[in-house]
Length: 211
Image 1 (spheres, rainbow, N blue to C red):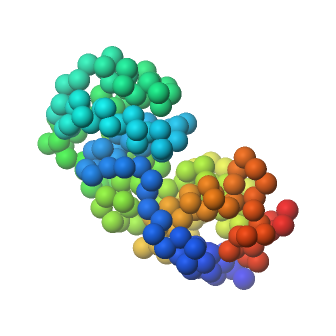
Image 2: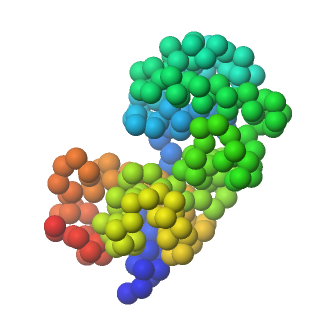
C-alpha cells in the first residue's frame, strides 16, 4: 500500500469516527481566531476559551485591541502562559490588521505569515477554518500521529511534515483531517498515557498498532 492509499483509508476511517470534528477554539470572527491560536501555544484550548471571554468583552474589535495597552492585554492573558510575549504579538498583530489591512484578516497565506506572531500553523488554520481553502495544520497531535501511522518517516519539524503531507493528502481534505487527528490524539492515540490501540479505528492500518 502506498502512503497516498494509506492516507485515503485513514481519512475515511477518521471521518466515520469523528464526523463533526472542528476547531475547539471558540470564535465568531476571523481576528478572534488569530488571537486565540496565538494564546493556545503551550496552553489548552479550553483554558484559552475561558481567558478570551474577558479579553473580547473589554476589547470587542480589532481597533479596540490595537489601542489597548500591552500591559492590560498581558494582565488578561497571563493565565495562558508566556503572557508578555503573547500580549506583545497580539498587540502588534492587531495594529497591523488595523493599519495595513483595514481591520480585516487577509485571505492571502503570505500576508498572514507577515503578521506578528503568526507562523505556518496559525496561517493554515485561518486559511482552512475561516476561508475554506486547502490547509494542513501541523500541530503536536498531527506530527505525533502521522509519524506513528507511517504517513511520514520520523520527521518532527512542522514545516517538513506539512510538506510531506501535501504530497499524499487531497487538498480539500487537509483541514478536516488535521482537526480529526487532534480529536483522535486526545481521545485514543494519546501522548501522556499508553495509546488505546485496542479501541482504535486505525489499529489494523497503523504501523505501530499494539506497540
